[in-house]
Image 1: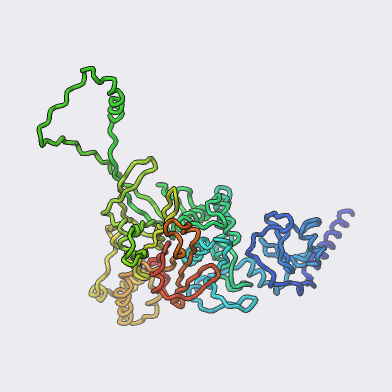
Image 2: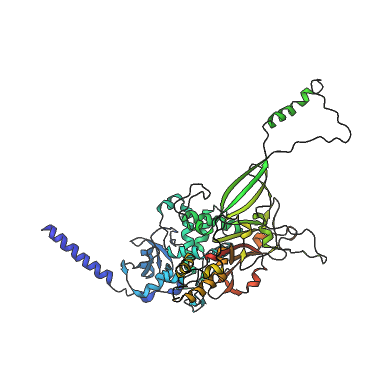
Length: 579
């Protein structure tokens, strides 16, 4: 009998809970969307605690911990009469202090602003989208080309994020992966996982068309970078973009399931997204003087030379006639060849001239990118010093190029007195950068079919040729052989050579600009006094944009080559999405 009564009470309580859960909240009209800002760190404004259960007040926009009695959120609801809250991780809405979940479609825009999500169709159409979106104040913005707030000298992070967020495979990966679930990675590389999580969240907010404001505050990523780098990239201090790109790519590699050592000979079964997009291979030939086996004996004999002096036991040196030159044996040279992986290539810029021009001004030289790339021609040797202090000569030759190539132009040099910047302008092509001369030829590389060979193919062979190069959709509607042959010939003559060659197009350019009087004769620090900009191309409109923090404006492609480029990101033509 007692069991039946207990069951009845549970059923009644369950029915009451269902009624409470499904009831309409009477306080939804108190929600103030203009005060909501989900870009900030999800931490309690009272206790400053962070955790999985942080709630945002939809009336005043403040964050509080907990939902039960005697928690900051419960106390805030009672004292301030603010009743509608959102769980910042679960994206669920609750009414406090009554403590029931709210289900209402009118709050869907808040959920979309809190955690933007993208369908496969939306991701496919991002590059071609030219439609402007509006924020709560009616200001227009183009998703993906949105300003980032400068949090006191964080323009370096802003420029790097803008550049990486426009690499299509990397962007699509983070837009699809709303949450990166890798338990092993979380425990192994906790800080790298946090940086990856914040980077992915920032990318999704940049490409969202449902934002409440027309810019993004990178608070979470900036704090995660400062914590994970152990103050190497602190807030309030300018960083070198080349170093930050290398460090951030390594953190994203670890955070997305990559191994700690990318040069390991044991190839992992699954590569990280960073390796798939940016990793290439380079062959390094190292020459250095061979170590003599009796160099220690000679040193010991030299130390004892004073003791033997005047003893008469030393051998007399042979007399040499006038004009005789003592023969010195040529030193032996050791040569080793190694293969290494890279995520970006560092290029050394020629030194700026020491003398002024005839008018007394400084000469800013210009160098073509081809002369800077001579480092990887496989012929020239370059001086280098190993970690142990041994002078070496190295020769570089590219073995495999990635689909997305990052070039780092080393502009800054630091000595014990000051930091100097090389203002040399490196001229580079925006389209059709040919790197075939710097890549070691590969045997068995497919050859281009000639026009005569194409004309002799039958229908099946023509379709197989187009399918092999991913052009099946182009010839799908061709019913007659004559039309099919025209399409194949047009593809083979105009587009296939570029696809098979190592040709690249520029998609992002990070520049560093310093004031005119900074860095001259030891005045100030050119890195700290300068600022970063980023140039990005919109594929759909074929328009270049210059982005510096919150400022986004159109720019002509001819102006990009006149800037002091620091980091360049090129896209292989064969990796571009075909329309």
